[in-house]
Amino acid sequence: MAHILTRRMMVRYATSLSLVLFSLVCPRVDGLWAQTSQRDPLYDSSEGEEFTSEEEPVYGGEFEEEEAETTPQEAEGTEEEDESEQDPAPVLPRDFSSPDSLHSPERLPEKQVDTPPVATVPDTEPIEEPPPMSSALPTLPAADTLPPHEQLAVHFVEGGVDALSRDDFEQAQEHFEQALEIAPMQPFGYYFLGRLAFARGEHKIALVFLRKADAILVRGDPAWRGEAARLRGAVYEDMQDYRRAYVAYRQSLQLTPTNLRAASALARLAGEGLDARAAFPR
Image 1 (cartoon, one colour):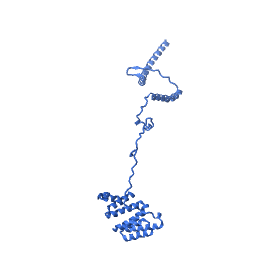
Image 2 (tube, helix red, strand yellow; image 1 turned 120 degrees about the vertical axis):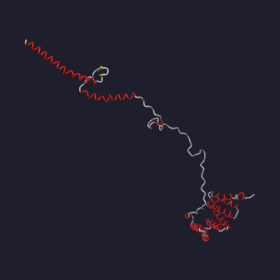
Image 3 (spheres, helix red, strand yellow; image 1 turned 90 degrees about the vertical axis):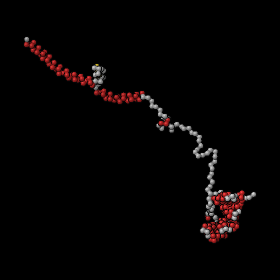
Image 4 (spheres, helix red, strand yellow; image 1 turned 90 degrees about the horizontal axis):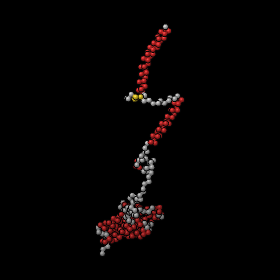
């Protein structure tokens, strides 16, 4: 009898203990289940349904390194596949292409058109400009190119020219005469003596000296011949012998086209109606 009572008491005690444990565990399990359902992406709380998927087997730590190594390769593979699936790059127009592109204008040959250069006329010869006109006297020859006696004569001529520029006619005449005594076949003394006579108003004496200078200069310097003819034309013009003046001026320009004094004298005769038609009346 005592044994039976003891067994019933133990059953009641176990039952009451189980109820107490169940009342303590149930709230904890409900809280854990609520947290798990909120974190699970496969749980759809809007419809009140749960979607389960097969869980991947969890391997040990020995396989974690292999998965870490293979992950970048798989990522690279996916990037290459994404690039291959993209559309090909459009071809830019040639004006906006880069220099390395085959469509760059620098790589394409341009058509060469046969056009004459600028500022040139085809099938024409270049026009030569005439030399400038000058009213200066021709230069005397260099002293080192002449014999010694002619060098001394040129020295006296230079002294007479300096005296003539100062209107010292007496000293100028002495220098020119000394030059002719040293070198009588030198034309410069005759020319300047004729110029000195023309400055004094001695027209006939001036013409004599100028003809002698021209005779010596026949095979000499054409510039000095042209200047002698020009001065001879000035003497004739001052004598109002316009026919001989016109001929002398024309001869001067034929010998030296740059003689400005001869060209001006011809223009002056034409302006006054004293050209060749007046010099040679019918």
